[in-house]
Image (tube, rainbow, N blue to C red; front, side, top):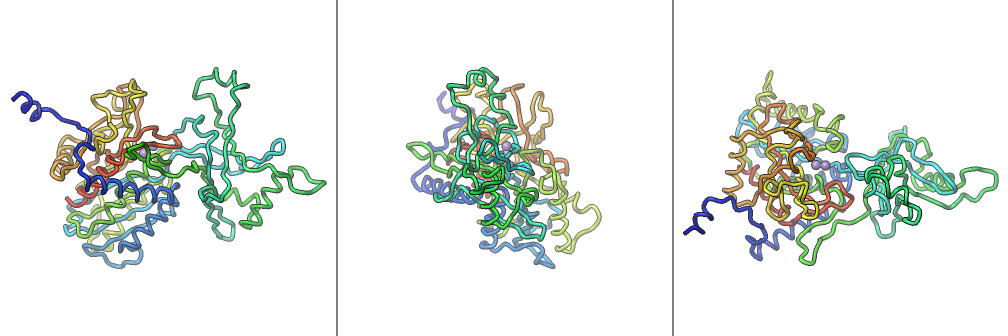
Length: 465
Ligand code: MN
Ligand code: MN
């Protein structure tokens, strides 16, 4: 009797794996398998956009610029400078009734090359770097790194670089001090153990075979780059080259229930929302998928969410539906709903002291909704309205999707932000939700396959509502 009462009244928050049968487990593992394959091809925002475009093309999506008119059921996308992308399926309902938007980001913390990266010191050649996003610098030394990106020449020729991913490629690394001589370093604060200026990538050691020149190792590297790519040193000034871990995404644990990979923040939400959109045909409300860039450094710039590029995309839809009129864009946003799909800090029992166990997101308990983000008195938060949270809960419960509602860390311990506030500023109803992650922002991040599945189901249900 009491047991039934408790069953009825308590918010259960049970482990999702307990609710899964053999067929569902196969489905869960299949989605994660596809996710890991996609991740291995898409370690940077440019690579993600390239793969996303391929996937969209093969599922009947077309560049919005190819359309002069749009009608319900049309599947479109817009690629912004190869680094961010918006996709949409035009709904059966008038777009004035609002869109259903899911927005994630496809940039991840990493090391970027400086504009003048190459130098030689004591017959070793290096690339200088400037880190991108919030990293713990010591985590980026003594691991295999690969170089991804583009070099653009003044004649417009664009050279795509991807070195260190194939087994036959060389890799690169940043060295650290041997413990025998590290007494002074080891007595520093952890955050000062490695200086940002010391994150220099080791790239070569063989001198060019010549007598009367200096910097022979640097010369040899430039000669190799010139023969391979036709570039000279100055061409590196118009490049975007990113260093990312050369690890592959792998299943983690004896039970293979987790995924370990670089860049899961936020490619786990980006991939699952993209994959969910590929499975849609007709939708009631226009479905929009945002894959944004620059979230990790504040969403600034013309590929970041703060840019008006997204407004341009929606205006272009209104134009091509032949319904545009003054202020219609504002109206569409005011009636729209959004999931800001970004990862949550997963509860880590080893570091339990930073989390409030009653309000933390746990691995394996399903997609984690953050009603608000922010830090220290909810400062900077986009706080979802109770009415909207209830509306989302209704969809999740109706579709029997496991979810949890959490916040990032204990009060006054820290916090974080996402792109949620940017869409909220336009008048959209927004809530943050995503997959809980362990070791967030580290070179190798951990997620649960159950939560990846739960995110996929959530995104699909939200668009199908
Ligand atoms: Mn994120
Ligand atoms: Mn992040």
